[in-house]
Image (cartoon, rainbow over all chains, first blue to last red; front, side, top):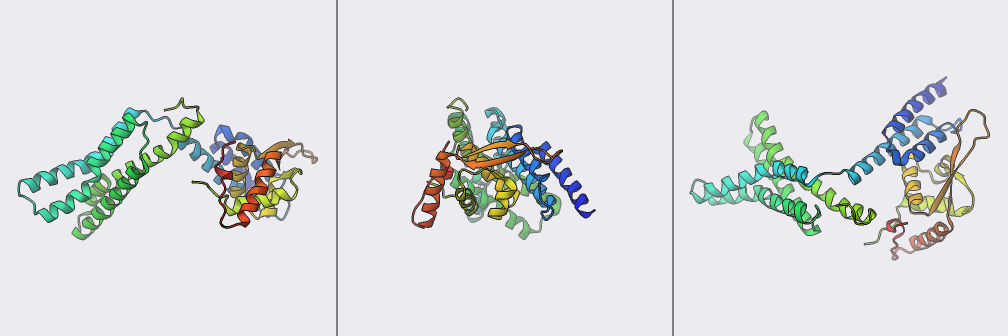
Length: 205
Length: 102
């Protein structure tokens, strides 16, 4: 009875795995699910089926990140949206400091936190339009460090200032989170595109 | 930079090389290596993609049950796996088996 119930749950999970798995791995999904029907009495069918689900999702994600055809113009819009808020903050800080409206120590701190905006925007647009989205390891490392600094610096400042939750969320997402996500996306593209292009015989790009 | 096979991959290599020409089931390999299905099958997939492993379907002798997928090393796979296992025994050696295209 218990075994039958466990098998029923496992079969439901297996059906879900078959739905999620990419078409290119259909044979492997069938192989895992067939094996489920041959497990001996002592083996846990649920555990086996959970493994099938994990593999199905992993393969689905692999296919999605490898073959997602993102147009350079959509990428451009994404990068502008992600890097524009910190760029605006950087420009406003520099302008305020130049006008003498902000002490230079504070301006230095603010501009360093927002530096990922203009630098990320220029680097990303250059890479998207002239280098097929690929960034050098050094550029990626620099952007990742700046994005981390922005995320940490801005979060710490907001927490310390005790800003209301609604503003905290808005500022955190616009200034801290979006550039970090953009840098992460650039890292995925830089990692995947050259391999994909090579696998497709240099036709992709 | 070269990549070393993971400990999981090495344990699968060890299981496969014991009987390099014998066909083995997924569950059987899972039992031999102690790997769960979620760990075992991605490794089997990559090895097949790289031409180190071959697979076939075998009809089930029990009526009403689906056919089973079976695996064994290819000739090239057996050579590569022996090399990988030999190198893994030497901590100073690096090899590129898992990074090498088919």
